[in-house]
Image (cartoon, rainbow, N blue to C red; front, side, top):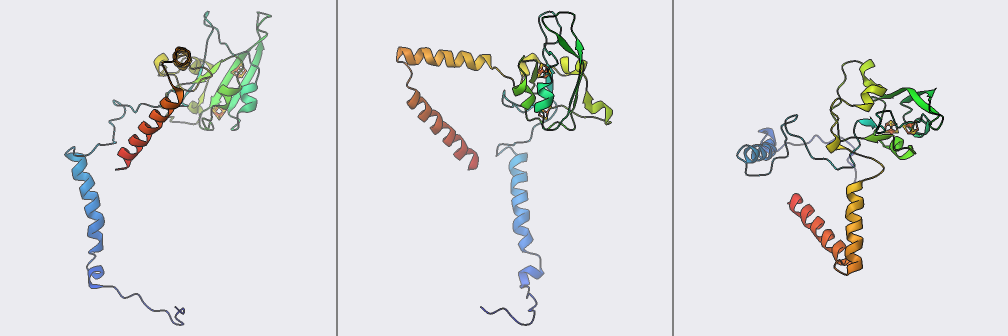
Length: 212
Ligand code: SF4
Ligand code: SF4
């Protein structure tokens, strides 16, 4: 169709003049409202902070500096985490450790949480498993200075919960599951291909149910 040489003003229908098409949009909102209030559909709203969403054990939240059994930091101030950090938000100042086998320790270890992009590269880079991440996402700062968390805060974050660890180099519970699966394969009681198919089918069922 040729493009009109003169602009043609749009002609509104009577329904459009009366704003009736808006009603279909409002009906969708009302339908969801009624469904949620009277519990006819699954509500995805949670009552935070009393209620919390369960995140993956690999969730990358607030960092934790881990300790040796004697309570000293495992960090040997090698700067690998700071070098790997794409946001350049880790600041370390190294000091000489009295134990020559350890050599160095961090006199200062700060992370600027407002610059951090929670990529987990620092965890991947650390050769000592000295830095891991937690499932803690409660991070609110009222001024710029408090967003820079220090060594003491990282060692024992204020909501530190050992049961809520997040991204870390090793997952002992998964190691145990793998060891058990290997035993079952050896004993011939587990078919890995059939198991993978079963899980794939379950995942598809779950996604189909959530889409409907
Ligand atoms: S999670 Fe990523 S951005 Fe944050 S401190 Fe570690 S390496 Fe840097
Ligand atoms: S946290 Fe790990 S990578 Fe970073 S300085 Fe300490 S030992 Fe090195």
